[in-house]
Image 1 (cartoon, rainbow, N blue to C red):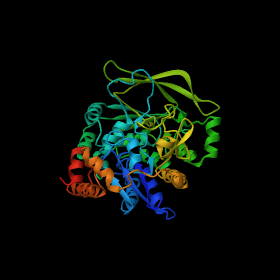
Image 2: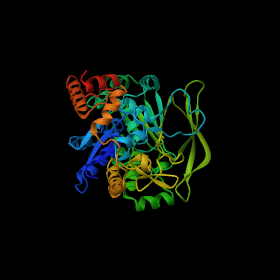
Image 3: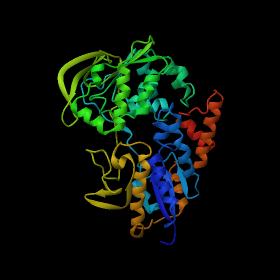
Image 4: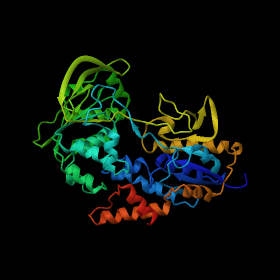
Length: 452
Protein backbone atom coordinates (compact mmCIF):
# COMPACT_ATOMS: atom_id res chain seq x y z
CA UNK A 1 0.00 0.00 0.00
CA UNK A 2 1.68 3.23 -1.18
CA UNK A 3 -0.55 5.61 0.78
CA UNK A 4 -1.02 5.96 4.53
CA UNK A 5 -3.09 3.30 6.23
CA UNK A 6 -6.52 4.74 7.04
CA UNK A 7 -8.09 3.60 10.29
CA UNK A 8 -11.40 4.51 11.92
CA UNK A 9 -11.65 4.35 15.70
CA UNK A 10 -15.25 4.15 16.89
CA UNK A 11 -15.41 5.75 20.32
CA UNK A 12 -13.38 8.67 21.71
CA UNK A 13 -12.98 7.55 25.30
CA UNK A 14 -9.59 6.58 26.72
CA UNK A 15 -9.46 3.29 24.79
CA UNK A 16 -10.21 4.99 21.49
CA UNK A 17 -7.76 7.83 21.93
CA UNK A 18 -5.06 5.52 23.27
CA UNK A 19 -5.56 3.43 20.13
CA UNK A 20 -5.19 6.55 17.97
CA UNK A 21 -2.08 7.41 19.96
CA UNK A 22 -0.50 3.99 19.41
CA UNK A 23 -1.33 4.08 15.70
CA UNK A 24 0.11 7.52 15.01
CA UNK A 25 3.01 7.49 17.46
CA UNK A 26 4.81 4.68 15.63
CA UNK A 27 6.74 5.29 12.41
CA UNK A 28 7.04 1.84 10.83
CA UNK A 29 3.72 2.24 8.98
CA UNK A 30 2.24 5.68 8.12
CA UNK A 31 -1.29 5.88 9.55
CA UNK A 32 -4.06 8.48 9.60
CA UNK A 33 -6.93 8.06 12.03
CA UNK A 34 -10.51 9.29 12.23
CA UNK A 35 -11.88 9.09 15.78
CA UNK A 36 -15.66 8.82 15.48
CA UNK A 37 -18.05 9.38 18.38
CA UNK A 38 -21.83 9.50 18.69
CA UNK A 39 -21.52 12.46 21.07
CA UNK A 40 -20.52 15.97 19.95
CA UNK A 41 -17.61 15.91 22.41
CA UNK A 42 -14.67 13.54 23.03
CA UNK A 43 -13.22 11.70 26.04
CA UNK A 44 -16.04 9.28 26.91
CA UNK A 45 -15.97 8.14 30.51
CA UNK A 46 -13.24 10.63 31.39
CA UNK A 47 -15.85 13.33 30.82
CA UNK A 48 -19.02 11.39 31.62
CA UNK A 49 -17.95 8.69 34.06
CA UNK A 50 -15.25 10.05 36.36
CA UNK A 51 -16.90 11.96 39.19
CA UNK A 52 -16.70 15.75 38.72
CA UNK A 53 -15.13 16.21 42.15
CA UNK A 54 -12.13 14.09 41.10
CA UNK A 55 -10.30 16.79 39.21
CA UNK A 56 -6.94 15.04 39.19
CA UNK A 57 -8.37 11.96 37.47
CA UNK A 58 -10.40 14.01 35.02
CA UNK A 59 -7.28 15.94 34.08
CA UNK A 60 -6.17 12.94 32.03
CA UNK A 61 -8.15 14.54 29.22
CA UNK A 62 -5.28 17.01 28.89
CA UNK A 63 -3.11 14.06 27.86
CA UNK A 64 -5.80 12.70 25.54
CA UNK A 65 -6.18 16.12 23.94
CA UNK A 66 -2.55 16.04 22.81
CA UNK A 67 -3.43 13.04 20.64
CA UNK A 68 -6.37 14.84 19.04
CA UNK A 69 -4.03 17.77 18.38
CA UNK A 70 -2.02 15.68 15.90
CA UNK A 71 -2.39 16.38 12.18
CA UNK A 72 -2.70 12.62 11.60
CA UNK A 73 -5.78 12.37 13.84
CA UNK A 74 -9.22 13.76 13.01
CA UNK A 75 -12.23 13.92 15.34
CA UNK A 76 -15.73 13.37 13.95
CA UNK A 77 -18.27 13.88 16.72
CA UNK A 78 -22.07 13.67 16.60
CA UNK A 79 -21.77 10.67 14.25
CA UNK A 80 -23.46 7.47 15.38
CA UNK A 81 -22.22 4.27 13.80
CA UNK A 82 -25.19 2.04 13.12
CA UNK A 83 -27.47 5.02 12.51
CA UNK A 84 -25.61 7.65 10.50
CA UNK A 85 -23.18 5.24 8.87
CA UNK A 86 -23.13 1.45 8.98
CA UNK A 87 -20.27 -0.86 9.93
CA UNK A 88 -20.18 -2.13 6.34
CA UNK A 89 -19.93 1.43 5.03
CA UNK A 90 -16.97 2.16 7.29
CA UNK A 91 -15.04 -0.53 5.45
CA UNK A 92 -15.67 1.38 2.21
CA UNK A 93 -13.74 4.37 3.61
CA UNK A 94 -11.16 2.75 5.88
CA UNK A 95 -8.63 -0.03 5.66
CA UNK A 96 -9.38 -1.07 9.24
CA UNK A 97 -11.80 -0.19 12.04
CA UNK A 98 -11.20 -0.39 15.79
CA UNK A 99 -14.37 -0.46 17.89
CA UNK A 100 -13.90 1.07 21.35
CA UNK A 101 -17.44 2.10 22.20
CA UNK A 102 -17.35 0.71 25.72
CA UNK A 103 -20.05 -0.69 27.99
CA UNK A 104 -22.71 1.93 28.53
CA UNK A 105 -25.57 -0.14 29.95
CA UNK A 106 -26.07 -1.17 33.58
CA UNK A 107 -26.25 -4.69 34.94
CA UNK A 108 -29.46 -5.79 36.63
CA UNK A 109 -29.93 -7.09 40.17
CA UNK A 110 -32.59 -9.61 39.16
CA UNK A 111 -34.65 -9.20 42.34
CA UNK A 112 -38.35 -8.39 42.91
CA UNK A 113 -39.17 -4.69 43.02
CA UNK A 114 -36.20 -3.64 40.91
CA UNK A 115 -38.44 -1.74 38.51
CA UNK A 116 -40.31 0.26 41.14
CA UNK A 117 -40.23 4.03 40.85
CA UNK A 118 -37.29 5.17 42.93
CA UNK A 119 -35.04 2.31 41.84
CA UNK A 120 -32.46 3.74 39.44
CA UNK A 121 -29.25 2.66 37.77
CA UNK A 122 -26.00 4.26 38.87
CA UNK A 123 -25.20 4.77 35.19
CA UNK A 124 -28.21 7.09 34.89
CA UNK A 125 -27.28 9.03 38.03
CA UNK A 126 -23.66 9.39 36.89
CA UNK A 127 -24.75 10.54 33.42
CA UNK A 128 -26.92 13.18 35.04
CA UNK A 129 -24.39 14.65 37.45
CA UNK A 130 -21.67 14.59 34.78
CA UNK A 131 -23.86 16.51 32.31
CA UNK A 132 -24.27 13.77 29.68
CA UNK A 133 -26.44 14.97 26.77
CA UNK A 134 -28.55 11.79 27.00
CA UNK A 135 -29.08 12.01 30.77
CA UNK A 136 -32.54 11.13 32.10
CA UNK A 137 -32.82 14.47 33.86
CA UNK A 138 -36.50 14.36 34.82
CA UNK A 139 -36.20 10.78 36.13
CA UNK A 140 -33.16 11.49 38.28
CA UNK A 141 -34.26 14.84 39.65
CA UNK A 142 -37.63 13.37 40.59
CA UNK A 143 -35.95 10.37 42.20
CA UNK A 144 -33.61 12.38 44.45
CA UNK A 145 -36.01 15.21 45.36
CA UNK A 146 -37.81 13.71 48.37
CA UNK A 147 -35.95 10.70 49.87
CA UNK A 148 -34.34 10.93 53.28
CA UNK A 149 -32.78 7.45 53.11
CA UNK A 150 -30.95 5.91 50.15
CA UNK A 151 -29.48 2.47 49.48
CA UNK A 152 -26.50 2.29 47.12
CA UNK A 153 -25.90 -1.31 46.08
CA UNK A 154 -22.33 -2.18 45.18
CA UNK A 155 -18.83 -1.65 46.52
CA UNK A 156 -16.88 -0.59 43.45
CA UNK A 157 -15.57 2.88 42.72
CA UNK A 158 -18.78 3.92 40.94
CA UNK A 159 -20.82 3.08 44.05
CA UNK A 160 -18.33 5.06 46.14
CA UNK A 161 -18.57 8.02 43.72
CA UNK A 162 -22.36 8.00 43.81
CA UNK A 163 -22.39 7.77 47.61
CA UNK A 164 -19.93 10.63 47.97
CA UNK A 165 -21.79 12.92 45.56
CA UNK A 166 -25.13 12.30 47.30
CA UNK A 167 -23.58 12.92 50.72
CA UNK A 168 -21.55 16.05 49.98
CA UNK A 169 -22.68 19.53 50.93
CA UNK A 170 -23.25 22.19 48.24
CA UNK A 171 -19.99 23.86 49.29
CA UNK A 172 -18.08 20.62 48.72
CA UNK A 173 -19.36 20.45 45.13
CA UNK A 174 -19.34 24.11 44.16
CA UNK A 175 -15.87 23.97 42.59
CA UNK A 176 -16.76 21.17 40.18
CA UNK A 177 -17.81 21.50 36.54
CA UNK A 178 -21.27 20.05 37.18
CA UNK A 179 -24.07 21.80 35.25
CA UNK A 180 -25.81 24.38 37.39
CA UNK A 181 -29.13 22.52 37.39
CA UNK A 182 -27.34 19.50 38.87
CA UNK A 183 -25.77 21.55 41.66
CA UNK A 184 -29.14 23.13 42.40
CA UNK A 185 -30.94 19.77 42.55
CA UNK A 186 -28.30 18.21 44.81
CA UNK A 187 -28.41 21.23 47.12
CA UNK A 188 -32.18 20.79 47.50
CA UNK A 189 -32.14 17.12 48.56
CA UNK A 190 -33.25 15.95 52.02
CA UNK A 191 -31.00 12.90 52.33
CA UNK A 192 -29.86 12.16 55.87
CA UNK A 193 -28.91 8.46 55.59
CA UNK A 194 -27.05 6.56 52.87
CA UNK A 195 -26.66 2.79 53.15
CA UNK A 196 -23.75 1.44 51.07
CA UNK A 197 -24.38 -2.29 50.66
CA UNK A 198 -21.95 -5.01 49.62
CA UNK A 199 -22.74 -8.72 49.19
CA UNK A 200 -19.38 -9.83 50.53
CA UNK A 201 -16.87 -8.47 53.02
CA UNK A 202 -14.39 -5.59 52.95
CA UNK A 203 -11.65 -7.97 51.80
CA UNK A 204 -13.59 -8.70 48.60
CA UNK A 205 -14.70 -5.15 47.73
CA UNK A 206 -13.31 -3.68 44.50
CA UNK A 207 -12.93 -0.03 45.39
CA UNK A 208 -9.53 1.65 45.53
CA UNK A 209 -8.21 2.88 48.86
CA UNK A 210 -7.96 6.55 47.94
CA UNK A 211 -11.63 6.70 46.90
CA UNK A 212 -12.65 4.72 49.98
CA UNK A 213 -10.86 7.05 52.39
CA UNK A 214 -12.72 10.05 50.99
CA UNK A 215 -15.96 8.69 52.41
CA UNK A 216 -14.56 9.16 55.89
CA UNK A 217 -13.68 12.79 55.24
CA UNK A 218 -17.08 14.20 54.29
CA UNK A 219 -17.91 17.52 55.91
CA UNK A 220 -21.45 16.75 57.12
CA UNK A 221 -21.52 12.94 57.17
CA UNK A 222 -20.32 10.50 59.79
CA UNK A 223 -19.47 6.93 58.78
CA UNK A 224 -20.98 4.04 60.68
CA UNK A 225 -19.60 0.49 60.43
CA UNK A 226 -20.60 -2.49 62.55
CA UNK A 227 -17.39 -3.94 64.05
CA UNK A 228 -18.63 -7.44 63.22
CA UNK A 229 -18.20 -6.61 59.52
CA UNK A 230 -14.43 -6.33 59.92
CA UNK A 231 -14.01 -9.64 61.70
CA UNK A 232 -12.24 -11.61 58.99
CA UNK A 233 -12.92 -15.25 58.21
CA UNK A 234 -9.93 -17.43 57.16
CA UNK A 235 -10.54 -16.91 53.43
CA UNK A 236 -10.74 -13.12 53.84
CA UNK A 237 -7.70 -13.09 56.10
CA UNK A 238 -5.73 -14.97 53.45
CA UNK A 239 -6.81 -12.40 50.86
CA UNK A 240 -5.68 -9.53 53.07
CA UNK A 241 -2.37 -11.23 53.82
CA UNK A 242 -1.61 -11.58 50.10
CA UNK A 243 -3.02 -8.32 48.73
CA UNK A 244 -1.77 -4.96 50.01
CA UNK A 245 -4.64 -3.02 48.44
CA UNK A 246 -7.22 -5.19 50.18
CA UNK A 247 -5.25 -4.90 53.41
CA UNK A 248 -5.35 -1.11 53.22
CA UNK A 249 -9.07 -1.15 52.44
CA UNK A 250 -9.82 -3.35 55.44
CA UNK A 251 -7.72 -1.11 57.66
CA UNK A 252 -9.72 1.95 56.53
CA UNK A 253 -13.03 0.22 57.26
CA UNK A 254 -11.73 -1.12 60.58
CA UNK A 255 -10.80 2.40 61.68
CA UNK A 256 -14.31 3.58 60.79
CA UNK A 257 -15.77 0.85 63.00
CA UNK A 258 -14.01 2.38 66.03
CA UNK A 259 -15.43 5.87 65.55
CA UNK A 260 -18.01 7.18 67.95
CA UNK A 261 -20.89 9.56 67.16
CA UNK A 262 -19.78 12.96 65.89
CA UNK A 263 -23.10 14.77 65.80
CA UNK A 264 -22.91 15.41 62.07
CA UNK A 265 -26.36 15.77 60.47
CA UNK A 266 -25.91 12.95 57.92
CA UNK A 267 -24.94 9.32 58.28
CA UNK A 268 -23.25 6.86 55.92
CA UNK A 269 -23.92 3.26 56.90
CA UNK A 270 -21.29 1.05 55.25
CA UNK A 271 -22.75 -2.47 55.30
CA UNK A 272 -20.95 -5.63 54.24
CA UNK A 273 -22.28 -9.21 54.02
CA UNK A 274 -25.58 -7.66 52.90
CA UNK A 275 -27.18 -9.18 49.80
CA UNK A 276 -30.29 -7.41 48.46
CA UNK A 277 -33.12 -9.90 47.97
CA UNK A 278 -36.15 -7.64 47.40
CA UNK A 279 -37.12 -4.01 47.01
CA UNK A 280 -40.43 -3.25 48.73
CA UNK A 281 -43.09 -0.74 47.82
CA UNK A 282 -46.50 -0.37 46.24
CA UNK A 283 -45.90 2.27 43.59
CA UNK A 284 -42.57 3.59 44.86
CA UNK A 285 -39.57 2.26 46.76
CA UNK A 286 -40.28 2.08 50.48
CA UNK A 287 -37.65 -0.34 51.77
CA UNK A 288 -35.02 -2.88 50.79
CA UNK A 289 -34.71 -6.38 52.22
CA UNK A 290 -31.18 -7.69 52.69
CA UNK A 291 -29.91 -11.13 53.63
CA UNK A 292 -26.89 -11.61 55.83
CA UNK A 293 -24.18 -13.57 54.01
CA UNK A 294 -20.98 -15.37 54.82
CA UNK A 295 -17.92 -16.14 52.70
CA UNK A 296 -17.42 -19.65 51.35
CA UNK A 297 -14.08 -21.33 50.69
CA UNK A 298 -13.94 -19.79 47.21
CA UNK A 299 -14.60 -16.25 48.40
CA UNK A 300 -18.23 -16.24 47.25
CA UNK A 301 -21.24 -14.93 49.16
CA UNK A 302 -23.52 -17.54 50.76
CA UNK A 303 -26.86 -16.61 52.25
CA UNK A 304 -27.56 -17.34 55.92
CA UNK A 305 -31.33 -16.87 55.81
CA UNK A 306 -31.13 -13.94 58.23
CA UNK A 307 -33.14 -11.08 56.74
CA UNK A 308 -33.34 -7.39 57.58
CA UNK A 309 -35.54 -4.66 56.17
CA UNK A 310 -34.07 -1.18 55.77
CA UNK A 311 -36.49 1.72 55.17
CA UNK A 312 -35.29 3.67 52.11
CA UNK A 313 -37.03 5.71 49.44
CA UNK A 314 -34.32 5.48 46.78
CA UNK A 315 -32.24 2.55 45.56
CA UNK A 316 -29.21 3.13 43.34
CA UNK A 317 -28.03 -0.03 41.60
CA UNK A 318 -24.27 -0.01 41.03
CA UNK A 319 -23.37 -3.60 40.25
CA UNK A 320 -21.50 -3.10 37.01
CA UNK A 321 -21.69 -2.09 33.37
CA UNK A 322 -22.32 -4.24 30.32
CA UNK A 323 -21.68 -3.77 26.63
CA UNK A 324 -24.38 -3.62 23.97
CA UNK A 325 -24.42 -5.11 20.48
CA UNK A 326 -23.78 -2.98 17.41
CA UNK A 327 -25.50 -3.95 14.18
CA UNK A 328 -22.95 -5.45 11.83
CA UNK A 329 -20.65 -6.76 14.58
CA UNK A 330 -20.74 -10.22 16.21
CA UNK A 331 -21.66 -10.13 19.90
CA UNK A 332 -21.27 -12.47 22.86
CA UNK A 333 -24.62 -12.23 24.66
CA UNK A 334 -23.31 -13.96 27.78
CA UNK A 335 -20.17 -11.86 28.34
CA UNK A 336 -21.61 -8.72 26.70
CA UNK A 337 -18.48 -8.14 24.63
CA UNK A 338 -17.51 -8.41 20.97
CA UNK A 339 -15.82 -11.83 20.58
CA UNK A 340 -12.17 -11.40 19.72
CA UNK A 341 -8.74 -12.95 19.74
CA UNK A 342 -5.97 -10.54 20.75
CA UNK A 343 -8.22 -7.66 19.71
CA UNK A 344 -9.15 -9.13 16.32
CA UNK A 345 -12.92 -9.43 15.96
CA UNK A 346 -13.95 -13.07 15.61
CA UNK A 347 -17.11 -14.38 13.94
CA UNK A 348 -17.90 -18.11 13.94
CA UNK A 349 -14.37 -18.81 15.08
CA UNK A 350 -12.72 -16.85 12.27
CA UNK A 351 -11.04 -13.44 12.52
CA UNK A 352 -12.89 -10.75 10.55
CA UNK A 353 -10.44 -8.94 8.29
CA UNK A 354 -9.99 -5.29 9.18
CA UNK A 355 -12.08 -5.32 12.38
CA UNK A 356 -10.64 -4.88 15.86
CA UNK A 357 -11.78 -4.03 19.39
CA UNK A 358 -10.22 -2.38 22.44
CA UNK A 359 -11.36 -1.37 25.90
CA UNK A 360 -14.46 -2.57 27.71
CA UNK A 361 -16.22 -3.86 24.60
CA UNK A 362 -13.17 -6.09 24.13
CA UNK A 363 -12.57 -7.40 27.65
CA UNK A 364 -15.56 -6.32 29.75
CA UNK A 365 -15.83 -3.46 32.29
CA UNK A 366 -12.65 -3.93 34.28
CA UNK A 367 -9.53 -2.01 35.21
CA UNK A 368 -8.83 1.68 35.59
CA UNK A 369 -8.26 4.36 32.95
CA UNK A 370 -4.61 3.44 32.60
CA UNK A 371 -5.51 -0.20 31.91
CA UNK A 372 -6.94 0.88 28.58
CA UNK A 373 -3.61 2.17 27.30
CA UNK A 374 -1.93 -1.23 27.46
CA UNK A 375 -5.08 -2.88 26.12
CA UNK A 376 -5.34 -0.50 23.15
CA UNK A 377 -1.64 -0.87 22.36
CA UNK A 378 -2.04 -4.65 22.19
CA UNK A 379 -4.91 -4.30 19.72
CA UNK A 380 -2.95 -1.83 17.61
CA UNK A 381 0.01 -4.23 17.54
CA UNK A 382 -2.29 -6.88 16.08
CA UNK A 383 -3.64 -4.43 13.48
CA UNK A 384 -0.17 -3.31 12.39
CA UNK A 385 0.94 -6.92 12.09
CA UNK A 386 -2.06 -7.54 9.82
CA UNK A 387 -1.49 -4.40 7.73
CA UNK A 388 0.10 -6.14 4.73
CA UNK A 389 -2.92 -8.42 4.34
CA UNK A 390 -5.72 -5.87 4.86
CA UNK A 391 -8.08 -5.21 1.98
CA UNK A 392 -7.61 -1.58 0.85
CA UNK A 393 -10.56 0.77 1.30
CA UNK A 394 -12.51 1.30 -1.91
CA UNK A 395 -12.70 5.04 -1.20
CA UNK A 396 -9.65 6.19 0.81
CA UNK A 397 -10.19 9.92 0.21
CA UNK A 398 -10.43 11.46 3.71
CA UNK A 399 -13.18 13.83 2.57
CA UNK A 400 -15.39 11.07 1.17
CA UNK A 401 -16.96 10.07 4.47
CA UNK A 402 -17.59 13.72 5.34
CA UNK A 403 -19.42 14.13 2.04
CA UNK A 404 -21.54 11.04 2.75
CA UNK A 405 -22.49 12.29 6.21
CA UNK A 406 -23.33 15.75 4.85
CA UNK A 407 -25.54 14.18 2.20
CA UNK A 408 -27.48 12.48 5.00
CA UNK A 409 -27.90 15.68 6.99
CA UNK A 410 -25.41 14.62 9.66
CA UNK A 411 -23.57 17.62 11.08
CA UNK A 412 -20.27 16.14 12.21
CA UNK A 413 -18.51 18.12 14.93
CA UNK A 414 -14.80 18.48 14.19
CA UNK A 415 -11.94 18.95 16.61
CA UNK A 416 -12.17 22.69 15.98
CA UNK A 417 -15.82 22.45 16.96
CA UNK A 418 -14.84 20.70 20.18
CA UNK A 419 -12.33 23.46 20.89
CA UNK A 420 -15.17 25.99 20.58
CA UNK A 421 -17.27 23.96 23.03
CA UNK A 422 -14.29 23.71 25.38
CA UNK A 423 -13.82 27.49 25.30
CA UNK A 424 -17.53 28.07 25.89
CA UNK A 425 -17.53 25.80 28.95
CA UNK A 426 -14.51 27.56 30.41
CA UNK A 427 -16.17 30.92 29.86
CA UNK A 428 -19.40 29.70 31.44
CA UNK A 429 -17.48 28.43 34.44
CA UNK A 430 -15.61 31.72 34.81
CA UNK A 431 -18.93 33.55 34.92
CA UNK A 432 -19.82 31.46 37.98
CA UNK A 433 -16.43 31.55 39.69
CA UNK A 434 -15.41 28.05 38.58
CA UNK A 435 -12.82 26.69 36.16
CA UNK A 436 -15.50 25.16 33.94
CA UNK A 437 -19.22 24.42 33.76
CA UNK A 438 -20.29 21.52 31.59
CA UNK A 439 -22.75 22.28 28.80
CA UNK A 440 -25.24 19.41 29.02
CA UNK A 441 -27.77 20.19 26.31
CA UNK A 442 -27.05 18.38 23.04
CA UNK A 443 -28.57 21.10 20.86
CA UNK A 444 -26.43 23.72 22.56
CA UNK A 445 -23.31 21.58 22.17
CA UNK A 446 -24.03 21.18 18.45
CA UNK A 447 -24.83 24.90 18.06
CA UNK A 448 -21.55 25.94 19.66
CA UNK A 449 -19.55 23.19 17.98
CA UNK A 450 -20.88 23.97 14.52
CA UNK A 451 -20.48 27.72 14.94
CA UNK A 452 -24.14 28.38 14.20
